[in-house]
Structure formats: C-alpha cells, structure tokens
Amino acid sequence: MIPLSWYVILGAVLFMIGLSGVFLRRNILVILMSVELMLNSANINFVAFSHFFQDLRGQVFAIFVITVTAAEVAVALGILVALMRNKRTLKVDEITIMKG
Amino acid sequence: MEAIFFLTFAALAVASALGVVLLRNPVHCAISLMVCFIQVAAIFVLLRSPFLAVVQIFVYVGAIMVLFLFVIMMLDIRTAVLERFLPGWERVPILGVLTVLGLQMLIMLLTSDRLLHPPADAGTVLDGTVAELGKALFLDYLLPFEVVSVVLLVAFVGAIILAKRERKE
Image (cartoon, rainbow over all chains, first blue to last red; front, top):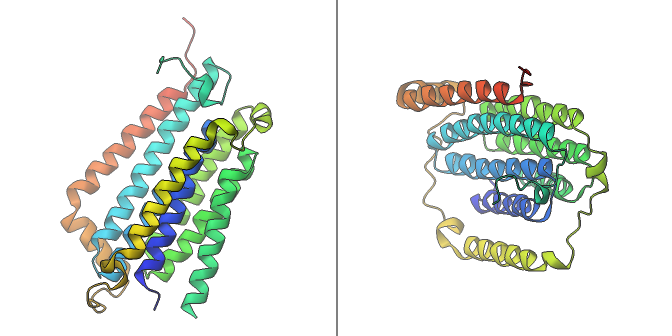
C-alpha cells in the first residue's frame, strides 16, 4: 500500500515544474503546456484523496477539471491562431497589444 | 511491488515534465508532455480509477495534445527554436521565488501530520467500477454535468469563431 503522501508529493513536484515553466519560458505554446501540467498535478491530488477516503467526489471533480481544461485549450489555441495572424510572434514579451 | 510501479511511473512523469520545461523545440515539449500524461494515467490506474485513466488518455493524449501539435504545425516555430530559453541573470529573482514556494510546499507537506497519519482507512466502500461513478455523476452531480457540457459547447463555438479567417468585405 502506497502512502497518501507519496501521491501528494508527486503532485506538488509536478505543480512546481509547471509553475517554473510558466515563469521561465517565454514561448506562449510552452507556457500553455505548463499550465496543462499544473492542472494535471491537481488532478493527481483529487484522485489520490478520492481513493484514500473512498469518496467519489474527488473523481467527479477530476472529470470536471479535465472537461474544463479541454474547453480552455480550445479557446486558448483559437486565440493563439488569431494572434499569429495579426502579429507574427510567439514570445509573450512581444505581445503587448493590451498595454498590460 | 506496487511501490516499484509507482516509483517508475513517478520518475518517468517527473523526467518528462522537466523535459517540457527544458526542451528547446515546442514539438519536443509536446511529445514530452504526452509521455507525462500517459504516466499520470498509469498512476490513476494504481489509484483504482480506471475510468479516469481512460479519460485521461482519450482527452489529454488523444485530443488536447493532437490539437497542440496541429497548432504547432500551423504556426512557424523556426524562430521559437532559436529563442534563448535557459534563465539569464534577470530571471534570478523569479528562480528565488520559485525555490521559496517549492520549499514551503514541501515543508508543509512533510510536517503535516494529517497527511502522514491519515484518518483510519475508510475500508473499500468503492469497488472501483465505473457504475458508481456514473451514478454519482448523473444523480448527485447532474446540474454541474450539464453546466460543464454547455461550457464545452460554448468554448468550441468560440474557438471556431476565433480561428476562422475573417472575410474581407
């Protein structure tokens, strides 16, 4: 029997890797992939707690997370394609249309 | 035995996740992320959640990553490959913040006694079949289920409209 903490630590490590990807990389595609990684590490936690507490709510939540992620990726890549049509760059530092 | 499987999957997952951050070419990053997702699906199997493992493979590996690869192929990544990607000196503060956050998280996890000594095992109430999950999803969580399907529909319509080439009047 694997202790719960192993799964939670794995989730934390994957989350930190994803977070460092968001902070360190400047390529917008890689940033999106790192966000996916972070969402997935949250899913590991949901399923691990669901298994250890024998409660289905964790799995139901993980399914919702996966669905919302699919929606998010579709919209994000749509925005990316529209952005590439107007401004030929993938670097987030050069996308300053909104003056943010 | 189970621990060996877990350690193998976890090590591969962490290694491929590092590949996502460290590899230079976005295509290699996407493949690496695919490997990571498959490892996570294997970990879901270890957690007796076969349905989620299958959904993970279908949705993440089958749909999301293929979408990513299609978009990468549509875009021109030759300039992105030349980008400097390892952190320079101006990224040192960010690295510091990341280190502090990661250490905080690990210390919190390692010192929390609720995690190291979880409450008494609830026993095997769930037998790991899909039937119970389906009942929970369609009886107790019917409204969120419908809402999330509407969200998905709206997102797809929005993505199509965003990606559609505007007709010049």
